[in-house]
Amino acid sequence: MPTCTKTRYRDRNAALLVLAQIQNQDKASRPKQEARVYFCDDCRGLHLTSRKRWR
Image (cartoon, rainbow, N blue to C red; front, side, top):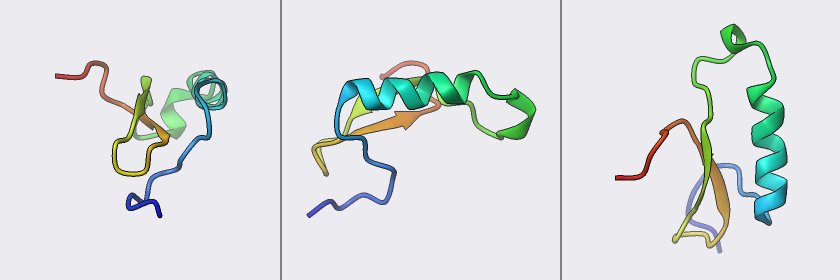
């Protein structure tokens, strides 16, 4: 059972499609601008993040 509360995407293509749609929206309408897709070890799914790089 997923332990995180973020939106989970079933595969990389689905996440990238949503990311592209978000990045094409008016930037003033969103306080954070998602920058990339990442794999979550907790739910074994993919999420979006506004962090440009992983440390």
